[in-house]
Length: 311
Image (cartoon, rainbow, N blue to C red; front, side):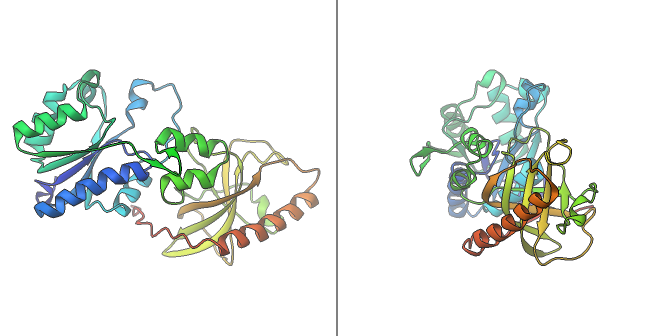
């Protein structure tokens, strides 16, 4: 750990989604960090604990690690500490986690956690446990209560359900920003070129639970941002294959193979469906492009994504 981060105030959690509730925890850590003149650091875990405890159960990650780190930086963290979550870490008692990791290794000046955060073997460490331990070991603990927004409880599971049911705008509202993915462009069958819609294709995690359909998107690549329209699904008109994200960038020409794209989802336009023939599909694609341009013209939401560097 860099020396300048020793003695930081840490926001602790899994932070999948870095949603409004998570950012309330980070804000509490940041407020205490400012008062103490210390950096604010996110302390998080990879892989997600559920991947260790239930490895055969698919988990729709709202923010896989590179996306989560980008979102944590955007949320105001000076840095992020990623602890490897494995059976050894899971077996550490709550007391040892505080003594050996928080105090001995990181010498934290303070911590902030959500009301439902638990840690240590058998989830033995609660927020109250951490606050009591902090009082004994010389660091303050802020516990952030449940957050509701627009009449809904803010949680990662609620956001997953909204994205999976096609309610993108509601999911974005709980996130507090437009949901985004980061991925490298792969070679597809180049069918889009023959249709007049060359696409950049990205293979998302197989566990991605985003509802199949057509979306108005913004794409960050090479330091520039483009509006676009994207299809996420199985292409039922052609092959009904494995799910693929296909993005058509407006007003762009060039080769994107191998490039890293951040694709931000701003509106869901319609469901994915099968067309009788290619002409009917192209006609609908024309309409989708017009609808996406219209949706994005009225959407001033920015992203300002700090993207991870390649290499």
